[in-house]
Length: 297
Picture 1 (tube, rainbow, N blue to C red):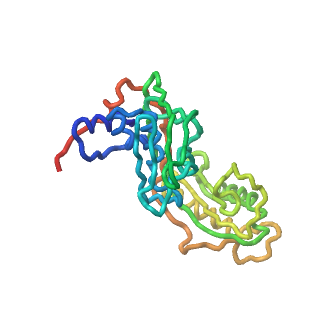
Picture 2: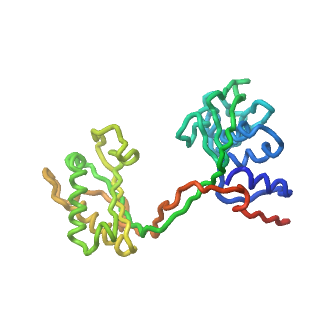
Picture 3: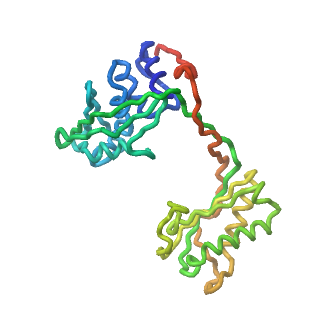
């Protein structure tokens, strides 16, 4: 949801609002917009304030920030005297979780940052101005949904043999082939087998720019997602068994290729979900889909 349901609740007299999934800056921008302040400035201020002290130096997610809005600007400052808000910290947090540096899409429009200015009023207060709100022709809400795709089992292990590390991609393909041949399950219909290699490309995956593995050891998370928990567990167990004992070329030790972090080595982690709806929903009324009830406490 956008700002409008919060504004409606405030107009109805709410002192505390408990809401569902919302555009993060809307929680902060609703009150100043209701009071007649510029929506571009209010939403931009909310964008910087939404993560609190993360927009300050030194950064801290558990600390608070204060925003003060005027007719043509707003001020940002930390409440903790040991922190400061700088042009760099305020502008950097404007870009936080955004794919476009000058356009912020939101329910009902867009924030245009093309001409936005950031000026230091002191060593801990920043003044922001010239942010513009561009209203969209069609109001949209983000619609999200998830579906269950199965059940997960994992193992966590490490490897230090440089030959194993060099051959790990080939070894993973061998593991996949052995699982497919050794179990009565289809990788297309019954399970997925995934490997996360920390020390190689565990963070960036296919976007990793360093192609040479420079680690002297690898952290390996083997993950099986199955149609049932039993299938996931069987695939995980079979995969770790192959990877543990497979006689890859050049191997010198035969006592095992992996160092498991835990015993038992495999964990059943239950249900797995993934996004299956991630769309924009066109609406005529930004409030009607969010019923509001008032309670006296």
